[in-house]
Picture 1 (cartoon, one colour):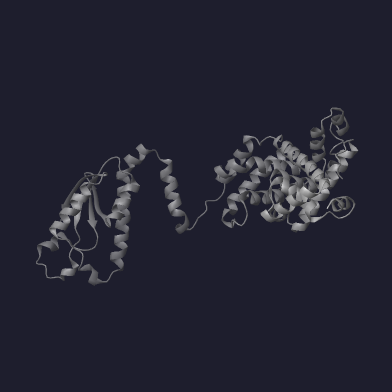
Picture 2 (picture 1 turned 180 degrees about the horizontal axis):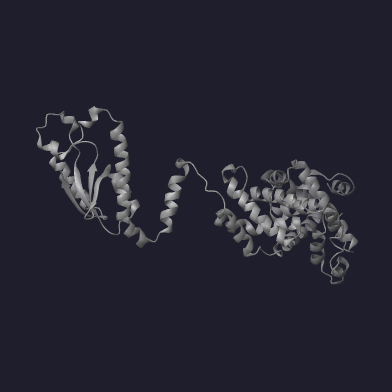
Length: 166
Length: 235
């Protein structure tokens, strides 16, 4: 268990943190995830990678944690994701740092878009794996990522950054 | 192809365009990778978009890596919770060997060496229990095959096929590991039938009687084992 935890806890934590946006909640989340793994180890059938299995459990736990929060609080958080920080995208543009702006806009995506971007880019999951983790058809994985990227481009454009796409 | 990628910006994206992020992350299968490579080579607009995707890919990794790691509190909480879990009862067939291996792996070589004699006693107890169960379940015809020192003084009128397999008194070296002793017993098809008196174990070999020469050869071979310090044939 210690080996499994040592190997995967950081990525599980980061995936959870990107979903719940609260370090304390994310830490509680990984304890719950690995405890579930401890309890259900016999149910793992080896059809997917262990990391895929862990991310699926993390996602389920994160959504449960989010559901425990007030809906209004969630909506505000999503809408104000960019505006509620001191260093908004416009300021970042003034610094001529597209990378910073990109990261800030990545943070400003909706939870649905954040998770698909993270799973594909950071966790390097295939279409099939993402479909299994999120519980959607493979074609939806592709289109959702496309629209997540489009939304990202819109956020960047609103911040004054044109990248030539779309 | 170029017209197609421009069209996608306002309308539904093409299959190839939707595969670009997965290509950047290296998670496409060989067939799709080839398809995307060919499209990128022939469509500059698509290649331009791919450059944008590579930037997104790099910054997403940068962003996630900047999130840091959880504190030790998370791990402490997890293992405290695991300690509080009820003890599970895994099936013997799947877990016994793993548990034994794990147990011995935790011991130092020195501890193992000193534990060798203790392990042998444990083996003896196990043999005793198995023997008792077998004796209890056997018919009386098997009882005639067993031998007792008192009976040995009486005239032997039993079937010759029921003769006693050879036995020996064996002393193991202090460095002998339990796994080595077990392996030796397996190799010789032997079992511990008594001991450890004065550090000696009475061991029985196989299930058939042997001639004097055969027994002498067996003792010689046994004496040559590195974990055996003494081996003497005994009635």
